Length: 402
Picture 1 (tube, one colour):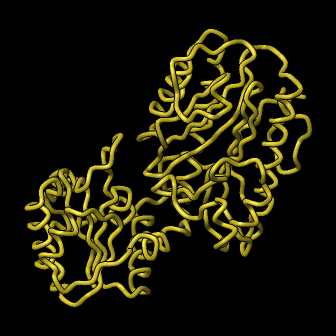
Picture 2 (cartoon, rainbow, N blue to C red):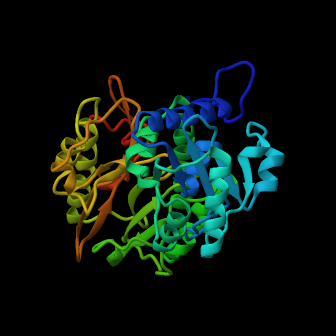
């Protein structure tokens, strides 16, 4: 699917957004029916998109109530949004009853009024169990007043994550397109990289490229980190002037149809050779990346993957990706205590790190999908050959120009 064009056509089977909507919603309904819950109250904007196809305008901070979704057994999901007129006009797969004016979660009285609407739409929740993905004290007080005999429980890890952990064919298509856009942005940023430019200027080139190619937003604020800021690693972009011979970490990600690319490479600035110590650090990180990827297969655990990269990790080796760029499965030291088996169709990023103050830091990242035969490493952008001593058998892109 990743090799095909972006526009649906009549002469080739490509990405089908309506099929993706149907299949995602059915997976959520199945997960709810397989749980002990009667309904879900969903406040994460990305999961309003997963359940209903609602695209939020995004932003630097989460605002409770910007998109509220309720999914009850036997009912179609209902969306409350400040964009309800836009949704009613442009989302014909939803009935008018499924789209409601924004729920006011900024004031307690607004929360109570919303809660009263819910029972009018899905029936009484008295004595029933409802799963919630995000909870705060004000919300709890208001909602419990309206639903005094309702039991509230986790609806995120136990239901939504279970629905989302296996990607559909169209979700995989979106992830791969997001990654292709990210790779294009990385290439433009590396073309621009030279001694004397600022980190923020390099990011501006990457961001412009992603936006011009249709990226809805970026996976995070994105990271261009250079010189002494690579060790210890600093996870944001500054106005530092990049100098000749600096190590530069570029960690960026585009967004396509609600799904996220996430790609990291480390490059030497300028037409110079790295020091032997830099090459050694890069090789350790590079080997850790592919050694971890080589463990990916159905039935393997996140603990096995994490162990293959040790000790070249920070607080985490990686994370799943979907409509949320940080979903299950997770790859952290805690994986050893509670390992999770990998399943065909899981998608995630692995990103080891090796660094030493005074020399620099190396961060590398690839995107992976668990397949029946093992792993699909769908990141194709090569590594800086000046920093690679020995090619790994799983690396099919680096070294072609040697």
